[in-house]
Amino acid sequence: MKQENSINRRSFLKSSAMAGALGALGTGGATALTSCSGGGSSNAPKPLKASGTYYVPDLVDLATDGRPLKAGVIGCGGRGSGAAINFLNAANGVTITVLGDTFKDRADDLAAKLKNEKGIDIPESQRFTGLDAYKQVIDSDVDVVIIATPPNFRPIHFQYATEKNKHSFLEKPICVDPVGYRTIVATAKQATAKNLCVITGTQRHHQRNYVESYKQIQNGLIGEITGGVVYWNQNMLWFNERRPGWSDCEWMIRDWVNWKWLSGDHIVEQHVHNIDVFTWFTGLRPVSATGFGSRQRRITGDQYDNFSVDFEMENGIHLHSMCRQMNGCAGNVSEFIQGAKGSWNSETMEIKDLAGVTLWKFDEEAEKQNFKQTDPYTLEHVNWINHIRGEKTIDQASETAVANMAAIMGRESAYTGGKTTWDEMTVAALDYMPVDVDLTAKMDMKPFTVPVPGKPLDNN
Image 1 (cartoon, rainbow, N blue to C red):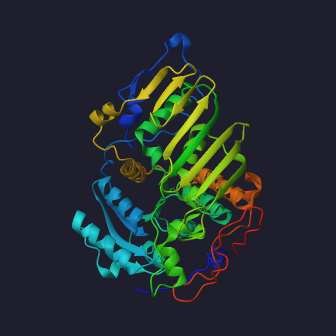
Image 2: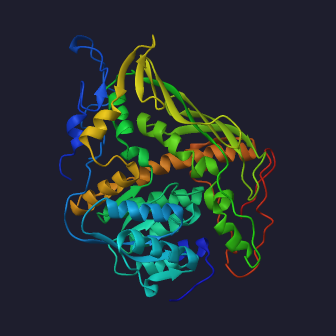
Image 3: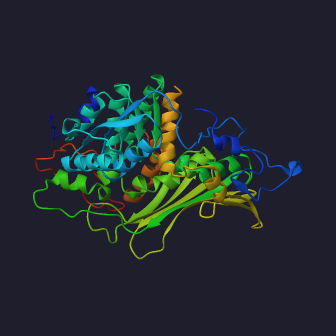
């Protein structure tokens, strides 16, 4: 196994379905997944979008049987390991044959997990390590790849997978900066041209209560959308303090969730889920973002602990975005969307009119009675496999890229103290990839400082 310990994204970029039960249950009126459906035909709401003009996934328990599929996993940490098991649980006739990770212990850990839990033996010759492990995984005899590396690397890996005609599952976020955003958008177009299937790890798109809520809103139950608030407030995530023998690069990658060049900061890495719900439900892009944030208690890395961002959307409505990772503070992971005739709240999965009367509520008990599989992390793989086996191209990367860029806009506004715009950020030269990423050599650590609003930030 060849191991390569350096990478430069700049030089690389230069060189280089059956009818679903949910669909049947969720069309109009009261359904097996719906309660408190209000209104008769005489005062039926005006749809925001006509039925059949927007995408609704077939969220069936298990993918349809079909041709065998061999997968390679790139990034064998917690999310990569989870996605590997989700893939195997999603269908019959699928397996994992090759693993890749920056570090050998990570690949070995996932190999042991697959053997113990699924009886799949990945020989050491099929476990690749180093910063170029993704190439060896993609170049092997696999049909699909699961990309769950630290986010900054995902555009590169997606691009290479598409060049090699592999279907991709991209964990979110799918980029951390404008350069990565443009790579994702261009590669998604190439993937579609090649009839490849690309699913992203925005699992709410495969969560039945969200999908049913989306349909109700498109049916017009809350009227025209007038604004919203999205939250991801929780305790601080994990961190790894530096250990003897770790190089600069190894430490940062092993502690990646705390470094802005690797994760994009938590507004991009985590809060993108909530922002995505609003951009998905409205179909709108942000025009501008004005935000602020700070670092109060984070132990490692160079990120903030909190962000608050005001987004102005294309039609003039506003979205307030709030996220925080601080112990001992109030928690809230949810979305709230206001309409002219009512509102939707993801905490309760219900729609209320302006007087506070419940018009609709998702029926969790009905879901449990009608479906065996209720895990959205598995259902996204069910949908992916069904598209591949049904030879029906799907591109979720382009849609996810909108929410991802919104989060980037909010982050940069908070970092700089300025107002960011979609038009400026989507063409910006901002590239978070260091020029000297190397697992063995000493890196220039000066750029990895906590941003100060009103002071220029140099990531190059």
